[in-house]
Length: 130
Ligand SMILES: [Zn+2]
Ligand SMILES: [Zn+2]
Image (cartoon, rainbow, N blue to C red; front, side, top):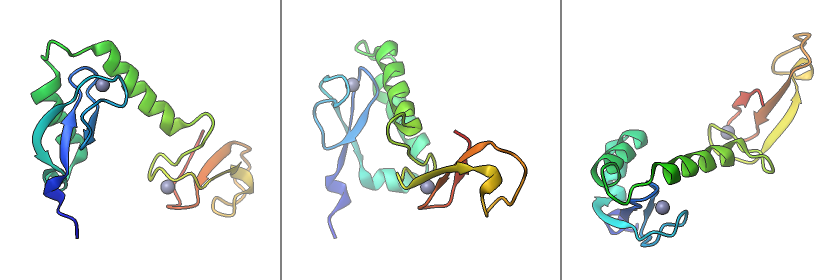
């Protein structure tokens, strides 16, 4: 098994992107800051949101390079990727095995009498309204 302590988190001081072992931000092209945190710390943290907030608090917010505009742009981009205008992705697991059907015809929901469309993930079974 590969040692996870070799996998170091880098944070972009401009847009807040965090990537493992990447010295240049793939979103805005800025030079990333090397943090002392590894993938091991990430897994130990248990809560990814908390972990990334910690990185943002320590390296991004308050950094003179920080751009709220870039940050928002990156967040929107992330959101758009999940909503997926071209490729539909499951918001729960990220799988693209999504089928779109009508609620009324779904065996899962029975004949509810509603014609509202619903997306359903073939991977984890999560369903949501588009
Ligand atoms: Zn960036
Ligand atoms: Zn899913």
